[in-house]
Length: 518
Image (cartoon, rainbow, N blue to C red; front, side, top):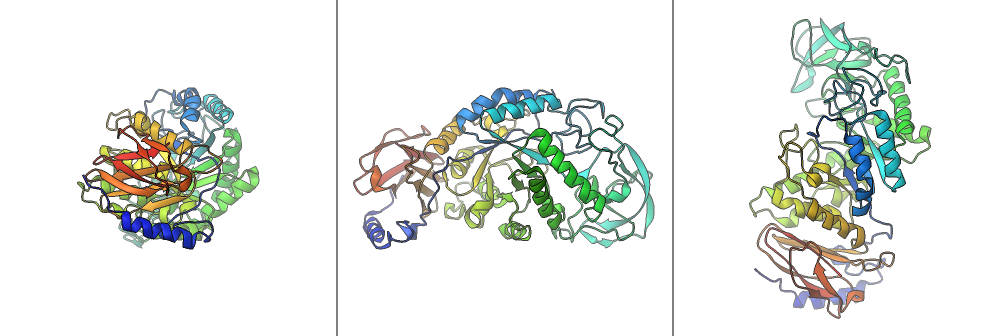
């Protein structure tokens, strides 16, 4: 146990408050104080995980859960891909027919994994009645589970550098024909054919798994996309050719239909680093203009380098936010650091710190959970610390994971609902006003929020540590003088009384989190 020596620095910093109080109303500028708006805090829940039961009951679960979500402070829900995949068990990313929301008998099922179209619409209507926004998952990159094969000219490419062709052109049998016999022409008469794609990974005639670039007049990989593997246009399945005008027009037409049909308030955009950057910018702008909705949009650009993410935001003219993947990896590294991670660096080179207005922060998702493609699961002991970081700080728009809240069906992630409810309540009730950071120790770091007039009783002090427990003096504002605060997580007993100058000596247990408030 230790207590941070503070007396000299406290006197010095109090004098700073007098000298610098005129600076945009931000006292304590050297501590990184920032102003927050008086609006209520928003919080997204990703309302699915990979291993949900294939029972067709998830839309009904969501419908029945709407009041609870409102009560705990969830203001928006990100739903899984709502359209038909290759079977009733498809999570939704094996996209077959985006116009079939669980309405037609295709691929051996009417419902999707999550239920029927009518059940989806009912859940959305109930969420809206509770004041909760709904964000749809939009998968534009690829199609899978075609109805038939076509003979196509193609060339193999080096999987480590897709710009390098490793064979001459030859004919393959590719799964690229989509007729949608169960739906027919309802909602759309568009049928996908080989020329709407630029790559596949399977030759049915030879039974070969390769990365094939399709040949055709002017056909090539899309650009600009992420430069990993030379050109990371191709990810999986039959890759859409966004240089083809039919593809551009059809995906925009569908986007308007999807948003209007489900009555969405926003979209989560899958795999944007694999899709032509300027197309994604135009698609988002088009759907906003044609629906007349100021849709929220967040893209999944999976990369640990924040410079890549900020570059993408710039190149797409800020049309969308991005998930803060670098922050997720900071949590992952800290949780696996054995107590040796330098917590002063926790927010370095993240969207939360460099571009907070475009940051959707998260701890875990369906791709990072155990056994999934991007497995990088944050260790269980650190998850409360990570959630406290995204839920009680000013910066970023936090997204909590269904699998962390309720546990996962495969049993590999337990439910953190009790502590997450406390942290969600802290965000809902207390996490307002000017923020001051105390990232001044390799183990114990913290921040405070002074509260605001629009949220009576608001203001808090958060401490997290990956090492021994201890205390830190932090400033919460002179308006809090004399108040008695408690740890709203319940991890620490006792109280902290705010002194006449607005300071308190706040405590945290080893490897833990405490959120102190009135």
